[in-house]
Length: 351
Image (tube, rainbow, N blue to C red; front, side, top):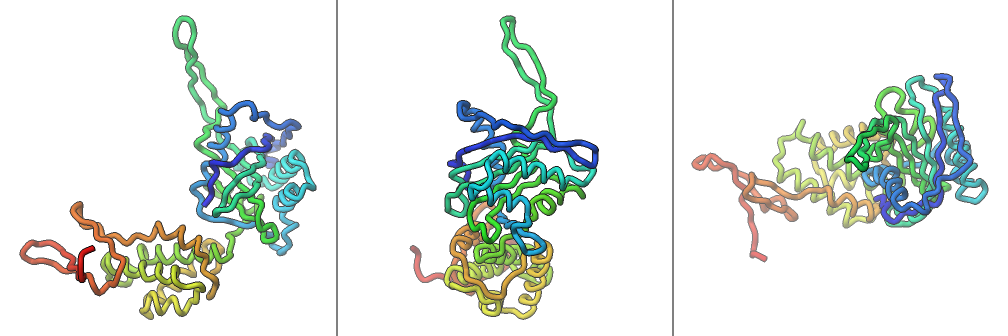
């Protein structure tokens, strides 16, 4: 989880990057933005730059096709800054010029590039320094009301930026540098030009450590039970909840994920196991996030996913049944006389 509320801006600078395919160029600033004396500006920048990342679930790492991290330009510039070998302004100019060089699709819009240095960024429960790189491409028109002696007057701004709509952004967290840092990415662009930010400029791929393996496997299994298994098997909601509860028990009580054990202990049906393997493989190929057959289960990832594992039977607007125990102690039926479905629940005593 990314927690930005306690983050502090240390440096902020703005450059402009055009599209060289449209014979545009770039403009580099020599001066940082003075935000220290304006609390309102700092709060607006926090909202614009950082709030969109509170909803991101995926953590990435930098990589390079040659498996040499230092050949990834943004990684290299960032590491030099974190190591004190490159000043903040030099860092900001380097990433902006490199962004210009990879802007090779004619539909990519020119825009302002904001580079920031941050302290107090919290990711997955740990506090770190970070670098933020953001790009605004879309301008909007705004009406402005002015108070004058004779009443109210109206003005407008045609090149305003909506602080609720960040076009592109990346936060590079200073941790695990040898593995490519922990990186969060936002990109609201659709279309053929969209890939340049994450793939060409940043060169990111999903982090694939124990935390990510645990979270991704639990997410894929949850989606499989909720969305896919119905296509082959006739299961009621109680059956699905039982499958979810069994998987949660597995991840909470085991230290290591073992693929064959999980299949047999949690799913327990050969056809369903085969269906799940195919579903998981599809996720792996789509997101370039291969699953390992065995990995150490990361308890923080289990805790994070637990909130999304629902174990509630919602029956019209009259009853909610929370199912935490054995599936065989709840039965579903149909009452011909009343013309209604029912559940029968067995228990020893009320608590």
